[in-house]
Length: 600
Image (cartoon, rainbow, N blue to C red; front, side, top):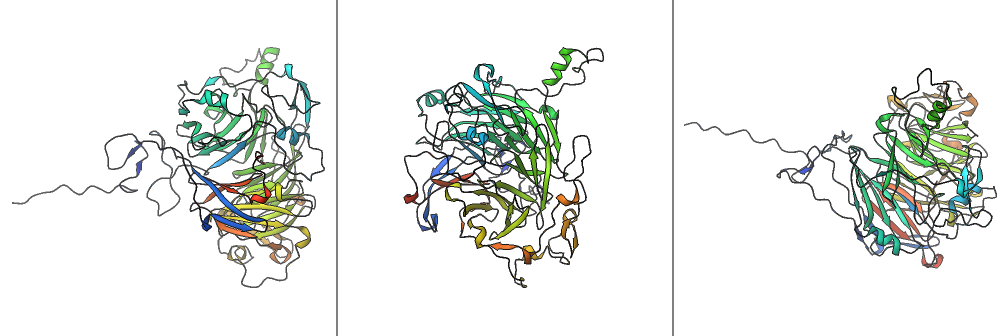
């Protein structure tokens, strides 16, 4: 008698304990919801958790592991670019943090002689009403009336601070999944000392708020989880911060933006239903010195300036009719709509932007491998210079504390130093073995002659660099033993080339990207092509100085996302959710002082 058996069940991808992205359950089990884990903190010790530089030994203080929220049941799985992966990957940029201090603290050492009222307003303290207490501005607020016009004083009573209107805890929105607040949040905020450090962090589809001055710093004050959208970036307004109010903006993979006050759990949603731009928000920054304006860099290569208090554009049925267009009421209605400005920058995603210390210039890096430097005018921007990577995208950018130099890092595995005043490349910094994801200057190790900066990348390494113009020399001709990633950019070598990164090469004028003939900046009306003189050719290796790192160490098993310098420590994050804090040498810090974050 023949016996028939059912065919074997097809194996599940991702193993027996993987998560089913469509149902939010564990594979191979009954339909039970995944239990969300909590943040954890560890204090590992040993020589492998230390690294030495000239000034002393840096030691790992703590390692906070943020709990990665499980995927939402209705979240659409994203294709994983890794051909060996067995599970889909969510759209994420890793762990990004923003440290915030409410009260007055000593500012970092500065050797910038350029008047910078905007920077002072960012570093100054604020009382409970959000007013600056620096003497001459008592009872007045500093606001920016135009993009590049600087700060003007306005009476505080005329500048009533508007707050978000929607409760994030009671909302029935299809955008916010839920918020997990500390059970004693109000009591902790009331009992908390004025001096201290808050940290905001985005990881996968969650935005967290941590109190780093608490003995239980791994316990978040609140955590917001979103549906189908991942926060890719966020920023905190240092002008309006106070003990009772914080303005936080976050950009999402769906193109949405939220303005959020964590003190009151109120929020407003901007660019809802892609009313302004449908592409993801890859970078978001408050305009220096402004209470209301912030810019968002979208994946379609456009930078848009928003006003937190303005509404999305009117729908067709809400727009004034032909009879009403000339009325004063219709004009006022249209003035209350976003966006404030729209700047098409390029045709590739914009990865990061950074304001100069004097708040007069903007550096932008994008997927097309270009660094573009703009001057902020009263109601627009003007392109000054365009520089190109050896190959691949540029992923990160920052300014030196005095505004003289600009750092970039990207897919060419290099950190590059550019001179803003001299309009030239200063040095290429070799040491990473994969993409460079974050660069930052250390203002507590900088003076008028020597600069300290750090970088992290996909190779899981932290690198520190000391840079002095006098120590750099033009290198001699480089032989055949140079780095492969650079040699792939030599004319005639096709290693690492691709269709979207092809380039036109000439021996006389240097190398240009294949799309260098396109306007690097196009005005809103479609005009304003960039003169060719603004696009600088790629310098040959024989003409570019090479700077080696003073320290290189693998500090995490996962690719790194960000580096932040603080007065007593270096903070490093990774794509898996780790926030690691490394104490500076003890003879160089004062434990009684509160650290001040440096943001670009």
